[in-house]
Amino acid sequence: QVQLVESGGGLVQAGGSLKLSCAASGRTFSTNTMAWFRQAPGKEREFVASITWSGGTTYYADSVKGRFTISRDNAKTTVYLQMNSLKPEDTADYYCAARTYAYRSTRWYEYSYWGQGTQVTVSS
Figure 1: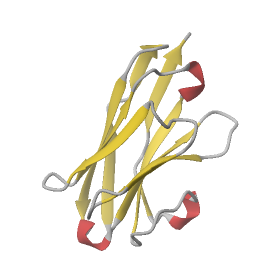
Figure 2: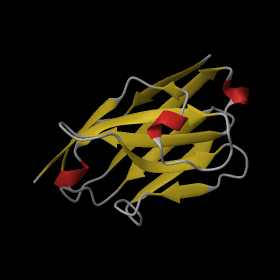
Figure 3: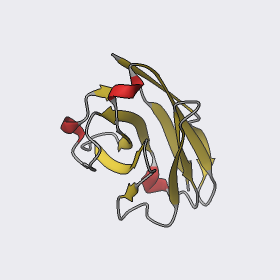
Figure 4: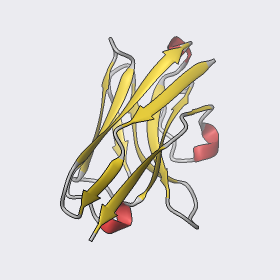
């Protein structure tokens, strides 16, 4: 099993920044790709960004490209999401997820492990 714990959410004004963290524990060696998803009230869960533990290959949704940066610290088995130039439409619950395979996936159902989520609210 793999446990994921997110932190760093909160309330921020439009144009501001937040940095989310996802601490992974347990059988982390069984995972190759980490990702962030988000879900706004009444909307489907959507892919935000992903990164591989090995090589650090990243991939972003078009809606966040150029504003968000995903990174990882292998020694701490922690993944980060730096969010800059935040917009009210970025308001959502943000979830960390992990999957075994190394190739990227934007489909939430292809991820086996999930954190409990952290709320991000961007005020206009």
